[in-house]
Length: 81
Image (cartoon, rainbow, N blue to C red; front, side):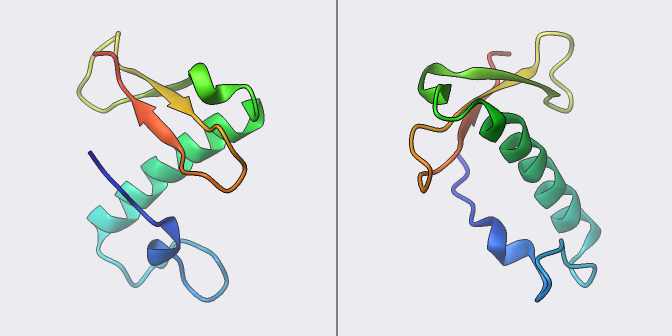
């Protein structure tokens, strides 16, 4: 399980900080894709919405399902694979 505050990855302008290690930038980009994939379906995502985002290394079945049940709440996600 990850509990992540995306603001920890951002610089003062709100962009993913180029001063972070490459692995941290890639992880931040992955989490940001999930947030971007889930938020358009708000508020109906409490039961899960397909994001179309593939989890690296999960094969064909590894597409992320995300949830968001309140505007200021956390984005949940899982991969059925």
